[in-house]
Image (cartoon, rainbow, N blue to C red; front, side):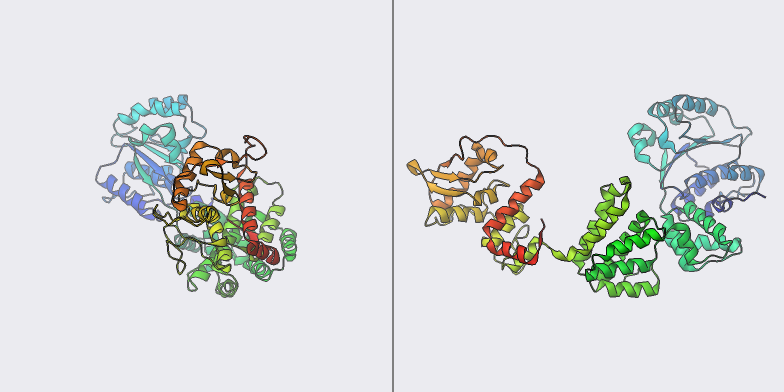
Length: 549
């Protein structure tokens, strides 16, 4: 006898049997029992969560001669059996829109829908799977029949990407009742797998079922297909190791070893770890996804030691011990660093993921050598100004930051500068007035603060203030009249009278420079900060630190 896949063998035959989607199944059941069935439905949701199954159950219920008063089909009559199995039926037609997506296919469907059902009292149901694959022209061909459908004809469109239907044929959405299907939780999948195993007269440890459920990622069909694979491999004697072999999962002990390498700074052992994974036949992409899960679990345990994470008890204890070796900020940076590899798509595109994985693990192991700008400012006796006021425990909002704190505050967050009034006392000298103007931040052109700090000022003819800037990419913008006017207005309260700003020529007339990248500007800003604060340079050099934004 041919084998029937578990996903098909245990497909629900009634509304009540569909897991998790009660908000859909109960609505449809009541619609059938109350004779309030719509003429068009749109089922949206991830794959394997019951969209096509509920479409078939709806068709069964509408055409079942033994339907209960509550709207449930019997599931065993000839009509129900044929619809449930997806076999050819006169009044229930399933169409795969991925291969029947053109306007001619839609017109054919429209013409067939005009014919009455095969028997009195029955319904014609058209189930269109992967509906987002239909072309704009195909949707336009169906638009009229969906607006004024023939009697006793029902359309059910199932899709994983409803946004594509919105883009291609927005009027369709207003002509359908839309139901959004949820992902199925791990506990619900485990419960369903246990029922299936009992029916198959076999059993499996709870840990093995949880691994299958997590891998299924919310899809019941995927979970049953994976269970089918495991049973085929083991012959019914299921254990956790067999599940890991089928799925290619890396044991938690490997990740615990990695966390030890990172925590203790044993950088060279990263290469040995990756080599051992390859020697044992593991997929490095699968290892990477497991790493993200472990880092997330580690962060949760560091924040909330009694958090409920889905791992074995002994692994949990080991993770709690490892979590104590990391600061919360370290774990956040580790997760951010690891997530970048997938978000930028490099891992999926690379023909050699080994190098990318090794570089990622090395970056994680060297994270203890990175210090945030805020930490450096505090170490130098300052405190970064927070958005909307001074840092907790720092100087008052009216006190301008000094020295390294002033320069770094501009680099970290220029929008956080405190804006004083125009009634400040004039300074004793031009240099002091210039410094106070820059420290206050009032009307300092955005992005030019570090550049102006590196400039020198002096009085010129008729009391004009001559600004001599260093050579750099900001010269072109500094020469704009609007920028000079803004500097004049901001400097005036600090010198006590109206001033005219004159820009000294540096090596002749200012010429437009080449396009400067963000990395170059960031590097110039950091270099200016290091020149301005020798103590900061000394800290960076002696501690071998990496400056971060």
